[in-house]
Length: 48
Image (tube, rainbow, N blue to C red):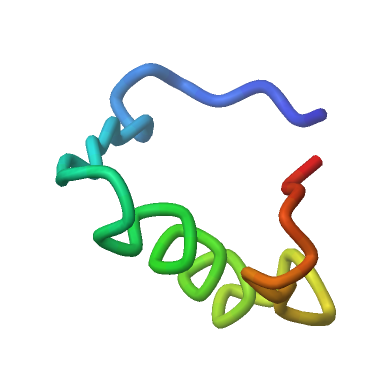
């Protein structure tokens, strides 16, 4: 993992009620950034 200068680190928080789609949104953002190659399914019931 590359070292990052603290001036280039951004923290975000996803807040919402249970079932509001926080995990799905985060996964979609990671997918669009090209860090993963497929989206999971809610029906699978696990995010690892």
